[in-house]
Length: 318
View (cartoon, rainbow, N blue to C red):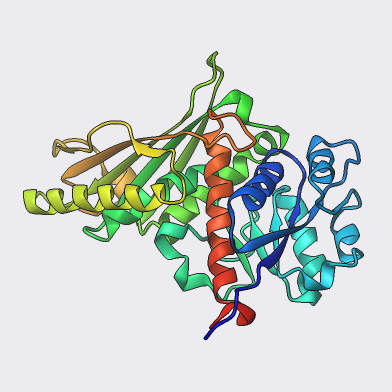
């Protein structure tokens, strides 16, 4: 007869919007994770102040401050919510200590992980990368199509409220497009992928909108019906850990005229139809406003990964 499962201790590096939202998700909604430390580099940051008020140990001395904390040895998982460049240094500093790293930056040192698509295949990785907000929202759809029919080309457009794009997001736009494009292929299964991000300045701010356009080469209506079913099932799977994730319109599959030069996108692959999927992502407003669904989907996916890792840690296996 098994005893009560112990919680897995986690730390967060990065006391900005993403790190703070992660903290609230762990504290308020996780039954398996214990918030052991929040790490920043600005002693005056709002995230560190909130952590201290909630009784979470903090340090403003970055990753080396974390390593020097008395509870460091008992921390199993470290979320990195900083930047691509900072993650390189943080991962190098933590490597000798055997911690599991969940990287929410575009650094992509470890394998790309999208929970609804390939989490179980990467549970042994020491450092997993959460791709990008656009990747978390759209790669499941590309994967849902590619598990039914070959996808020679897929393109995603992620539109996020300008107010939800902080300095880190703006500084990493090039990394966003490159990382997401690569993951559309590596995880989504498309032969070629492209990603575009749009910072929407509308007032009041709008929730995250994502468009997935995929080219396929099968005119069979039965295959098209299977593609629709696969996408609907995938949306439900993502919504299980990101409740604000939803289809905004009916899935469209339309024929492409033979004289359209699809070879510029799909090479020599035969292309007959375009699949168009329109998504909305509304944030849970745990810390960030509801329009910041782009950040909420990242933190929700990261917590999903951490909880799955926690479930297989030796002390929690019955």
